[in-house]
Image 1 (cartoon, rainbow, N blue to C red):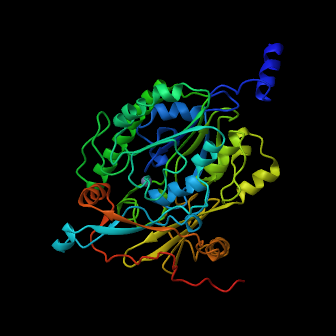
Image 2: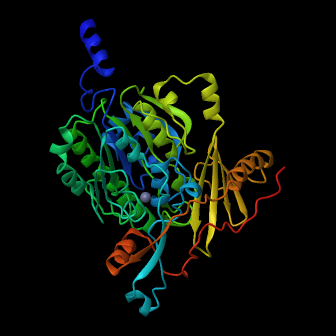
Image 3: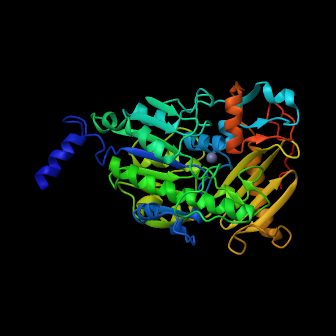
Length: 459
Ligand SMILES: [Zn+2]
């Protein structure tokens, strides 16, 4: 064994051929994005229904973040944070595909609509580009039209497919077309795989779906049945591809979903915890299975994956590597820094008029600022954010408010890269099915980068 190890060490040092694809020192990397998945609807987070037998088994071998947050509550800005390591104001992708129109106006129904989106700044390096630069073969299979070339999500991929619509069985078959190519070759691969099954429209899936009279209860039952159905296909995908402990895996969601906690169904117009909290787990070489009691963010994934793959850290971004926590090697000083860390979120809002929502997550506390109104919650006593404690906890709420204003004072970056996208009728009907049509509002202003609020005087 000693001799074999010695030979292996020589190979790694470059004395021989490159280490083989998927070897522990150059692992294959899989980013599994489960759109709209609420972690508290997974069995291993204590959900009452058996929604996730396969993901449960993955979680047992993973470092799972007890509390993780998105940087927003909808797909495009969240995935842009995943791809850049930046908060939305810095990467500039403030809005995804979203149609604003008055349905009562028949003329507008038949005319194409132009949406102004922001592309990634050209000089901002994206997650797949880091891996591509290190010789990885890079693949993307996505099923949400937000993850398309319009915003620039195709950058850095050797092969890129974004299906307009695709359930997990279709994903299995589409991905299989690359199986021979990806499984051969000398270089490891980086794969971004984006599944949409928990997203609207919720299909009633056997065997978990039980019809409910109440609209919200029925939506929840459909949603849960979709999770279990997707979980079964994930098991098939993982078995087919042999993704085990040798593969560097991150499984996460981009945001959650609301089922009436604050009066709505879906993920629009709010930054409450049911939308801002996400799944975040890592499995692979060097990762110790554990439940991690510190706050992780979606913008941490980029520096963390580079760290765990032994690659150069990013030269910009506000996410941090969670590597010390995943390895179980964090010093007391590092633990203190993670414990004292705040994670922020932003969301453009179009109702009743265009404005901005901001949130701070700090320990068990959350502050949401909505058009000049401050909401303050303590999740340890109020997990569904029903009671505003801003006046009950004046010192604590002021402390978190100050952190949030420090973040807001950084403002929006100046690397805006606007692009016009025409929404044809097919796209509009797809957006409608996904819940991305606002039928009551005027068009939003073209520039979302006007906060409309002034920060308080610094104290
Ligand atoms: Zn999403």
